[in-house]
Length: 381
Image (cartoon, rainbow, N blue to C red; front, side):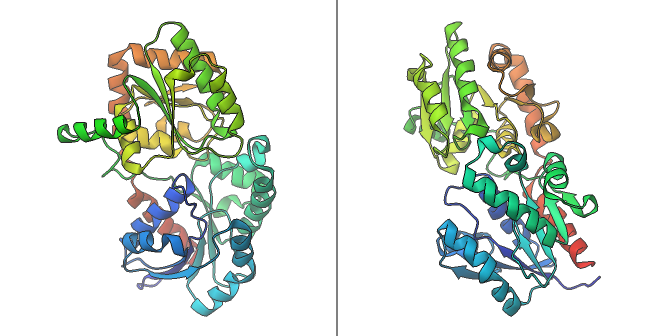
């Protein structure tokens, strides 16, 4: 044990240009760790496009940039050049926050494992990603002194499918920025409405947020929505997120739904617009087949929005008792749960109140504190 801060080198080059999922985790963790200079001296390896944002989040961190933004070159850099960089920097430890650690790693390593569905549901992922992430996640876990799993569901996946030693895996849930994701104050209502109007969104609406890809199961949500409209529900459906690999099935479901004029494809929206969408939704519906964590559910809860989501993966760990759960891929059950919330204002208010209270337990400061425990465990401090 030592009293000096841990010199931690984090490889942030995996941050995607569209800020979602793992990118939000990395950026938020950087900011929360940087707020604890007495505990950690943070050094970052970053893509040039992220330099300004990382400087704002971590003004005291040393940041070294690379020019390798395209995935094939970045991955080659990570395993051929990064080990040499690490030797020159000589940190106490290296943190790979997105599944991987480089070969020939000399200091202790910590790796974050996000999602077991590359192993358990290969059909919902791009083939090239399956080949890479299954192989490199196993290798990263093998090289790591400690493994951070973002949920108990992810922990089980890391152990059962990626070969992690149970004694070396720490469960560290993600967090939510409660300064932004919260119910609106009275003086924010007009600005929220302005953001929604700019996107062409009108009340009342069901909201979904994420990348449109097979695992998110947007087609089931579209079918559930179409059945609600057929029964006379005066609702719209807003899908906020970028088109990703495998979006064709979702687009076909929308085209054949008979209610496409009531479905708004908002695309990738700013963080401010996303907050406004959460706050104004009658219900947030998230029918994902499985999630390593399910951050949009936590964000919606923090905003006081009632949530309907799927059972069987990580969402049950943090939303049990404060959200409505249905089985994955069950359009009728999803429609029934949404109908219950929309038609029962008292239930909607209670879910919103309970969700906000539960989300208050999940700050990025808590994630950073637990991450530091993993760092100390890797170092034996």
